[in-house]
Image 1 (spheres, helix red, strand yellow):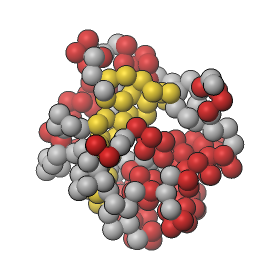
Image 2 (cartoon, rainbow, N blue to C red):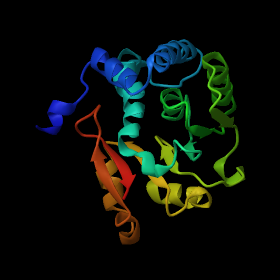
Image 3 (cartoon, rainbow, N blue to C red):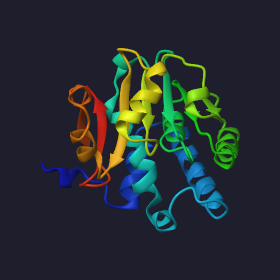
Length: 213
């Protein structure tokens, strides 16, 4: 079966996929989050206007698919921390928090209006497992993260440098890089290239996720 056969092409397919990764309560919260995001996007530019019509494919399922690349050995479901860098409107951090209430999820976002939106979502959705830190990453007190994700935070080498205080030998990096994933990894230093590989995205045949080995 080809990569094309696995793609989530429609909003209905993406909605079913994302909801299928959690329980009924998570499905309800995903719907609530989608409404909150679309409403707030009328007041600040959280996602591009054209992508509103494909919200579930482009943003929600695109974030949810990161769960395909972790397992119980990662420790995130046993007290470990999932650290999401430059969370913006909560992608992927809030989606992970919704789908995995047993995980401790920490979102770092320095832009004040986005932090206000994230705080509002956490309150409205009752996400007791989710913490929002409204600071630049350099000012955040380090802790050991079992998973580090970042959707649009920084180029790979800069991201690794900034996140190193939070990284251990067990840390799993999950970095959706869109259509630049392969190119960005190819131009990295050999020592970095040897640490990662690119996984195909389920929402775009040409997009990839940089994943630590």
